[in-house]
Length: 265
Ligand code: ATP
Ligand code: MG
Image (cartoon, rainbow, N blue to C red; front, side):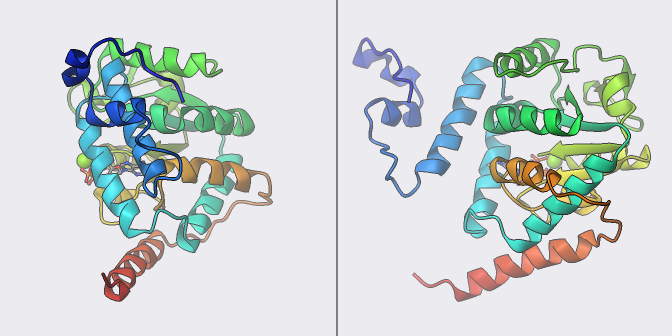
């Protein structure tokens, strides 16, 4: 763990609470919430570095809630969705992985590995787009070994959307046939579908519009889902054509409902 420089207690007010706890080693790896707190720390650092948009904190919090309800595990419904996703990506003509600030800081390395394995194009594509942030995310991914990452071109638009959030790359999302969109917004997911693309979403919330609009939704944390897709890529034989996304989402919802019903304090 990287120890942050710390000169005077006066600086404390500038650090977020979790950074401080990390610094004084109050979150040992044995802490029952260690992994979750470390992910939170990555998101907070991402905001400080200008990689994650401030609203990414809220998106992460919503994700955390659902992950809590899911028991922070990959369930059969998510594993089956990851398997179907792997088969689609491996059989696509022009697969694309869309990357935003949250996905870059949480699973950047794993996304790069998945792209290398499948030949998928990586594109940094942001809801709250600014060229500066796109550039920062690309640099962040390049430092982890990512190559040929699109996003700066901004030479095409996702049809049916207004403003900056429609901007994309012609050789990336615009041209793609199968698009993996981790932590996407429902509106944009729907617009991609209307452009005739097959959309694979990773979303911990089975009730979100993204989850319901996508063709395949992996109801799992991105940090587990991406390595899981990669693992399934190794044993893809043919494309899984029969996929009932609504049923899979219902399975996820049933799991959450049953778990809540059976939980006791
Ligand atoms: P929608 O626009 O699809 O209806 P929303 O408006 O409720 O969704 P957004 O902020 O647009 O939410 O998107 C963030 C989504 O990402 C949320 O549904 C949240 O559950 C999900 N999410 C956040 N963190 C993670 C994570 N680490 N792994 C998987 N999903 C996550
Ligand atoms: Mg949304």
